[in-house]
Image (tube, rainbow, N blue to C red; front, side):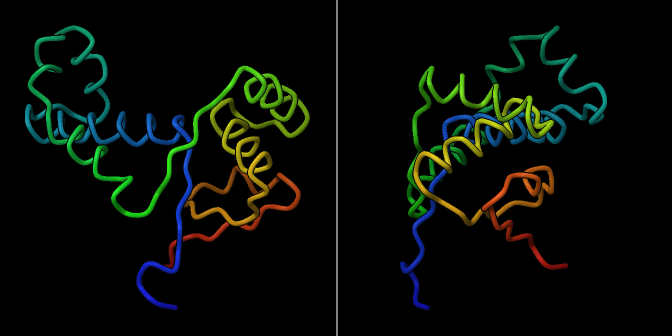
Length: 128
């Protein structure tokens, strides 16, 4: 395998989750918030959110790593609700699975075991 042989695909939902987590980590680093109170602090002080820029710059670089970002439709959402009900998945996990099914994708790189209940998916987890 050579550099450039792998093409990544993600959804706008996963991109939003990444942006949110990076935003919280940046706030913890920049303002000294605890991980338990960071979200509450940012909600109470929206001017602080305006000062956060590293999460946005990092998120904007993701497509440069040969990762395409797939949009979501109302049909995806409806299918995800059914998948959630039948497999006990949370909304964002079921959206990820539905987008993968729509694109005929079977391999998922994730540290999240929750999607292991979806038939036909192989989850590739980081090794310690």
